[in-house]
Length: 490
Image (cartoon, rainbow, N blue to C red; front, side, top):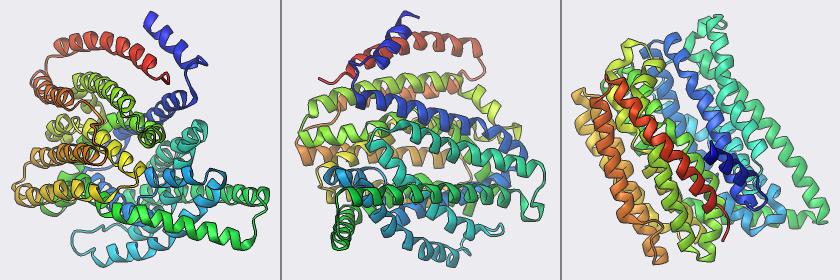
């Protein structure tokens, strides 16, 4: 209890600077939103059959890959670098990004529609929902990036909860009450989510336009000056995003190719089982990804200042903290899976243990790309994404048709490990310095691999698993205290 009180006092203390407090609140907000959405999974797995859940998962894969093309991956590092250059015109810069991305939604949707014969989506209105979701998520993600840059965590929390919780809850109600039954369960769920996302995007766009007008009036800008800023913003965004686009597309292939290949070769029933286990295994990105994402503005500022010792110290601590979180999660993984899905999904349980290894490599690869963007030297990271993507795709095509759900999970996890290693190497080539302690990070990841195998072996021994939880819970409290100390700006 003493450690918790000390941590609380650190968080609320004025000595803990704004970026540090915002990082903690962003992480907590991310955990609330994604955690609540994660807890809805048992309802969907009991309302939808594995085949229906697989159909929904396939839609998610198409959406994830398409959003990379439509958004040009501006949300995150690229748009934040643009905000850094023109702080006083942040909303006008945001509108410039909206105008750049929106026209790409229709051709992307039509391209996917033309390819639907190759194992595409079959439920009614799928591609209409995809088009609406692409526009909506691009606007929402760009706006969220602005919230992070300005350290405004309350709007971030509200948007995240609406996006992750409200839409699925309303979908559950519609499915349960058999509204729009002629469209089927899957169409009802995705259609509702798309409608809510579109409404949220419309409101955020209106707010942005209003604030942009206020910015322009405050600076007494002429129409020519406004147009010049929009033009220069679009040019700068394209300068950074176009070289990055193949990299981000490659990363999406690493994360989604397994699902698309399972759908094609094994069927949507197996995909439904795999997707539930995958979602459970990757759930800890709500914490690890939340921490890394919230640190992104700080990380980019430190990279620009050349303070790599502070970056290294912080990332080493965050990795250690993430290891403890993953250990605790793995210790209860069998019980979590039983809660999430009925027995018909149980054959996919090992997938959950394998995918649980991904959050740290994923987060560190995101940090590596953020540093490259901060340095405005993004061409070098292209190979960092293409090599693991081609490796994952080749082994997936070769091995997934054999019918074993463990293999695609192993292939995907391996792809993320390669992505992380190449990203760290690229940072070293750009800056001449490592962003983390490579040897210690490697040792921690090897430990997690063996620990995951151990817990899977002990999955039927609840007492032993909960003894491990008790030990590591105490370690977590101690590390949270140390992390609070580290978050003070030096």
